[in-house]
Amino acid sequence: MNQPVQVLVIGSLNMDLVTETERAPQVGETIMGSDFRQLPGGKGANQAVAAARLGAEVIMIGAVGNDDLGDHLIRTMAQEGIKTNAIRKVADRPSGIAQITLAQGDNRIIVVPGANLACTPEWVDQHQSLFQQADIVVLQLEVPLNTVIRAVELANQYDVPVVLNPAPAQALPAELYHQIAYLTPNETELAYLIRSLRVQDGLDQDVVIQEKEGFALLLEQKVPHLLMTVGAEGVFYASQANPQLQHHPAFPVAVVDTTGAGDAFNGAFAVAIAEGMSMEKSIRFASAAAALKVQKFGAQAGMPTRDQVEAFLEQHDE
Ligand code: RIB
Image (tube, rainbow, N blue to C red):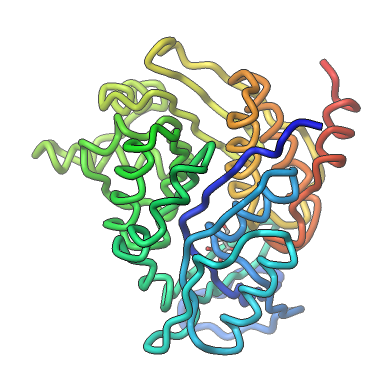
């Protein structure tokens, strides 16, 4: 058997407080929910679990509070076989939480980052050796932006490709784009990135920009590979080498819970690329992981194993 690839994730760990309800409440309205669960989540941790279940050796840099939630979050990572030595516990902030409302097949999420803000550039600097060993670095935007910028710098210094899932969306410095091998926004995040670039350039941000134009604008920032995930519609992809927009349809499946679908995609995509799969195969592999995830409840609990992804791909052979 081949050696497992090494995936370094720098990102958030949250406890997801998940409420299920028939519909989301209106402003000022109280409604009765049907179920409540407390489940480990956080985009960083979810992507780490996705990669680990697919057979990668995963190391995570992050931060939790010195509280029961923090213990629980670290324990879950360790149970998934993820190396947790670089997840710090801080006394001055509570563990991050995400309040998630599930209604009508979709989710609404509010993240309170808490201890995730203690995943600082200095903390990342203390773990430089992890960059040296990594085959791929995976980042999102639930830890401070300066931390992400520092992690990208280190990854570039050690010549390790970066996957940045720019979620939740925030303005990125223009000079960051060309340093990110794979940028993976969803459609809302892509629109946000375009608006923020227009603001940086002093242009009107209230214009409606079509998908194609949005892609072209981001490619102008010299992002090597741009992948936009659009839920049930699949993935749109373009690159510096081939700026022609390609559409990779999603696998049609019955949805139970979309929470963590993007994380399943990103974790799986990172593993596939690090293993040397072609771009087309990597997108297909990651789309299969996301399709399996949405059929199960819970961000991390629903992440598929390698066998499940491979069996699913066989069943859906083209
Ligand atoms: O992507 C899903 C995740 O977003 C949830 O697990 C929640 O913690 C938020 O970070």
